[in-house]
Length: 384
Image (tube, rainbow, N blue to C red; front, top):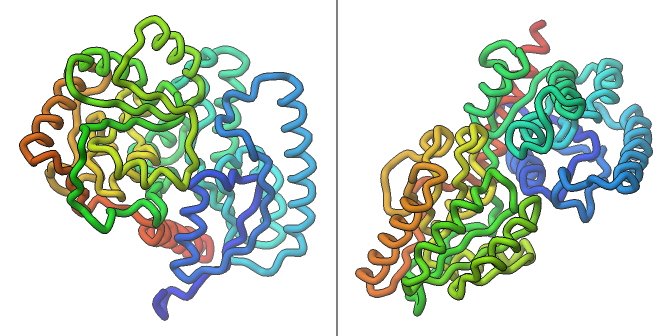
């Protein structure tokens, strides 16, 4: 921090999901920028990797009671918390905002919300679990609309995502900020950046959600069965049943499926593969977000193949062999692109190069972007 921009004291409030890299990176980045973090949170999301899959009535009631008790405890703690410059509500914070908004007036602290994901976009537009005019669809929209108006400032992960929020939830233009997701420090190029591999192995990992384009990936794998290419798919989620059924109908000998690996193992797994796959959905959301897994792969310096999108083009500052973009939901083009990478690998004497070509987004980058947003918000608040 510079003399004209002294450190801030930021109070983090609510039932944030501390298991998500997004939350951890925000807090680490702010600390690296020299800001003090006051913790006023309780994590109610332990053992719930995919929130949209909490469907049983018993589980919903248990989660609701846990949230209610936690938010009452946190509200009391907040009233006696040390003086602070601003309140940060992390994802998911839609309901937390209803409690912190009146309390923050008493402490004269602006509320800044990392919206990160829209409930309406996730449930209705992306995963299509409810129709827009259904009760669930209307409630999801109302949650987002109200949350946007219960904070002094909100931000998302990309400028394209921020513009979507402004348009969808009727917010003034250019009022929603953008702070990139980035990746944690363990995702970095290996010490030996040119690695020889006996086999050409392609990796996909992530939650099995429509955004990732699993059908496109699986169809491309089918087209490449005759090639000497190995595939590894890691993950589970909304589309797990579909995926298992697809494999049972058409087994693929050169595909290894792993349901779960520990988060700490991912950097090593990435460097053991010759090529990593990103996301391939044609949805509007896939066009405006950069998935956390994509930042992890970019930060590791691994070769990446993912869909062409406005969000990806915004972060690529040069052309290189590290990142290849193809049209979404096109298994034939995906198979051709993988095959070309395989031929390049053979021509390079079966060597994979892991390179840092300016695409890395670290916790410090996240902290700098977040700090600038906080400073603009505090400056506006003080002058109002």
